[in-house]
Length: 355
Image (tube, rainbow, N blue to C red; front, top):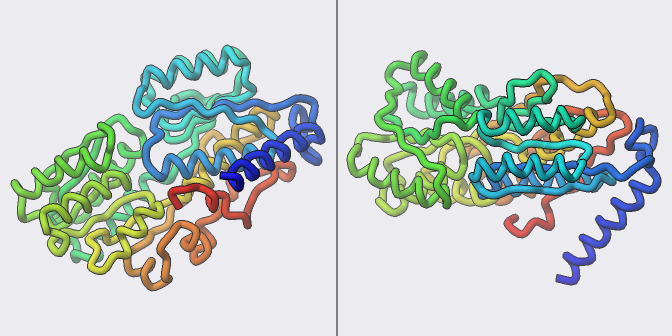
């Protein structure tokens, strides 16, 4: 506990000193003329991906001497919209919207812009040319996982599928699945289910167990969100079917790695980006908008494919080890500027308890 308090105190002192001095070579208002305050408004807070994203955003804010206030109530879309109005009333300098539903977030986001507050959005399409859109390359991410399935099954498999419509990254991964099925007609979708009721993994496991009992011919599962994939693995363990079905997913975490690297694990592959790096990009992008500097409207984060074999061959059991063994995963050169400090070496998540 003393170590944690000391670390937090150190970060607070660092943030305060950076604000007082300003960032070297930075334009106003990052030159020390005022304390910058950014609001991070979140739809989903459950799951390791979401925690790592938050940790990356917080670390980038600390590096820049920026105050970051984080709002979030898991899967409560109206609360997320209300949080934007709270941030507007707080007169924050910038807003980052992390996931959400387009229909509930577009008006609050527009109202923030009308109040003179720059807005960037991660994995939710707000359909506004003034709002920077940050996304994993979800089409590629879905395709990479599915290509691993195609390779393992020589293009012929009976596939169970977990999908919830209306979530932008899942919708894009679904489009990839639709395209891959056209390219490989013998890759057959047998049934689809899906829920975002919490806890995600447990609730989806309940559905998958029923699916497996009704469809014993399923030999592959596409679960393009790691909490979904955890649910499939849970269901396979509980039905003693781990040797009959292979799982292909998106996203990665320490818990995912540990499940993937178990002997004879059914979790064969996952395509992923570094959520901590995306959190950092989100903060940098809104900082550039606050400074009135150029930033592209669409920012894409490239994914990597990890298989149970590649992780085992590299001796990877945790996210810390993954970042050491696969250094390309650590940093994304997106939304950068000479005056913005970027942490390429430090493991921003080493003090996060779930790692």
